[in-house]
Length: 253
Image (cartoon, rainbow, N blue to C red; front, side):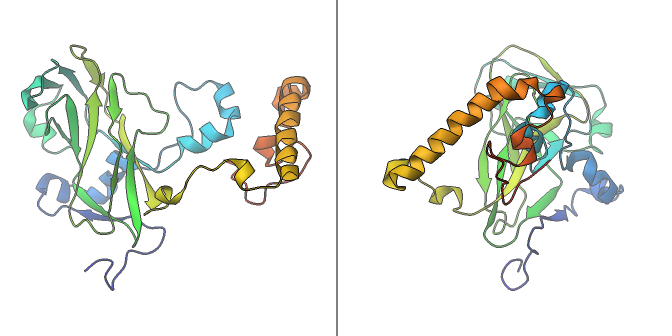
């Protein structure tokens, strides 16, 4: 049994293709895998060059993995709670769609779009998958429902779900559009954190030093940095603080 003696290797997400999904199973599924699940790229069509000067956005663009559609479709919700309240429209025949993935329907009703992928994902012991919006992709009128799945334990596939926000608005989704995202996180990692006031942790001189660094950094960004050609010298991008100290573990891109 996976993760009880035979473990998924560290820093790995194992993909188990569904042997009962015949159109997927026997149609170059390993090559097609990247048509529907992949690492997100660094760039976004709607970003201007200015966006890429923000390192947190650039790193965020590439976080985790995304689920994409292999086909065009559109949807509209009438505001009701039944499964039939969401209507889907496809430009291909049902026979053609049977060979493409993921499957799209309204499994739960209540204006929710469910995405069923043709594989099961398994993670190393103690690692969950957190379902998120595809990072910095904007799909009109829907929000990905956040979920945390124990994929080290769960022995079946699961649905990615999108909540339609406003009824009676038809939205078109081109093939290749990222529909949802997911990132691996250690179980209980986020749960173990709590907020504490700095005064309850550090001595006064440490707090004063940090507040002064914040003040000096803001001054540098507002007064000095704009004078630099093309923003060259942006401290955060270089992994430095305002005094020239380097970050010990800096992610550059």
